[in-house]
Amino acid sequence: ILTDYYFSSICPINSCFDTYYNPLRSYVGTMMFSCPLLFQCVMSMSAAHLSQKSPDMIHVALSYRKQAVASLTSQLSLCTVAGTDSTLLLGSILLGMTSSWHNVSSVDVVFLRTARIMVKEFMVQQQHSNPKDQPGVHPTGTFSFIFGLLAYWEAMVSFIFDQRLEELNYLLLHDEQNDHLICPNPWTGVSNRVFVYMAQTGALSRQKIMGDIFLQISCTTPASEEILSEQYKHAADLERRLLEFVPRRDVEIIDPGDAITPLDHLFRLAQIYRLSALLQIYLCFPDLVAKSRGLGTPPGNSQARQSSRPCRGFLVTLAVNILNVIATIPQESRVNLFLTLPLLIAGSTLQCDRIPARSTGCSEKPEPILCGSVRTIESELMTSSTADYMIQHWRSFTRSRLEVLYDFIGLGPITRASLILESVWKRADTDTVGMTCEPSESLEMVHWMKIMMESHLESIFG
Image (cartoon, rainbow, N blue to C red; front, side):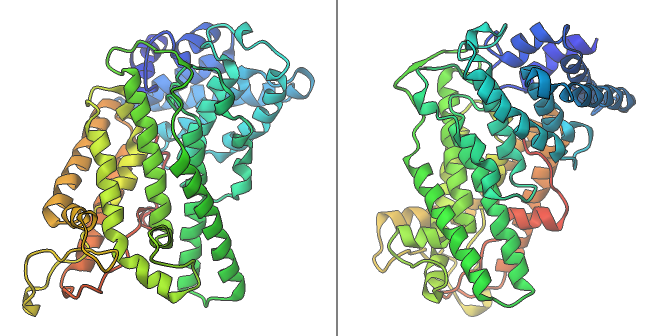
């Protein structure tokens, strides 16, 4: 029963396309009956998903998971002699990524650290093997498949545990620009690289948020200023790479042939993650917005901090653009299964700049949000995006998409994402009530990661 459930119910919700070209169906289906680890992972995933509606399956899910962990541990001890088997790496990824299926708060970073060690050895092995020797793998080989899963996994967990940026450097060892053939990955679609950038964005964002929290309870020191300056440099470099990034269309791209998820949807997935990573960087480093628009200077200068405030309109407009792209994707498309994090980032940015206080005699008409001294069409568009009726419209859209996503997948992390958003919106609305209409006044945006940390709502949002 659990085997059938994996192919009928898990494969369709665990890939952005689901045909023979989905290795989580074809490769796992080929290998699971000869590999106890993959078989136990499949059984554990099926039982864990069933337990969301049938609690009596929880013990079955945990039992298979325990067996899978034991198999992984046992086989890892042989790796120094026999080398890293792709099934061990895949098993570690599946155990780590589905940890929140068993316990919504679980991250199980130990599997990620194990996978990082194994993939380096695996990369060396792949340099001396024929990628088409692997059964049931898409034409670009086992490594491309495994690497894509790792890039996605790193992107999801980067927002919920502390690490150094250097720990992600191994993801840069594979340059997809050198590939002559692209076969979409079940988790990253047509580009692994954009998820590498998202992983770096998450790690850097967490460092910045933790630094901000620390500075709230301590004084600024030369050391803290140096750390901030270094973070800013990393953010600027990451911004540059994201701005330059374009998914490749100049090589042969295999169409997986999924009727409800055409190839174009996978390109839109890459664009959504690219824009979401940029928005996340700007939320943490608003000075970058001011600087790129010629309105500010690097951190450490109080003028830069002041000039970045009015650019809230730019951030909201970017968020609305992301949601507009999402809105073009039909709800039945499998791409939606991978949009929890973008919906969280973009949705959390939907914050009114201020609510005019009636007692001040201010007009109900929203003040234009200007990022310069001259009113332009751009500023008018940003003013429209930040109008209360637009904010409420896109909040309703975001809320609806997450509800549909939960109905389809039925896993706890989606509920947590919704709770974070509602908390962000409530606090943002509370903060703006009663503000005066002075154009120079603007509250800092409520950041979703701070709300997540304060409320202990961390989870793997993927």
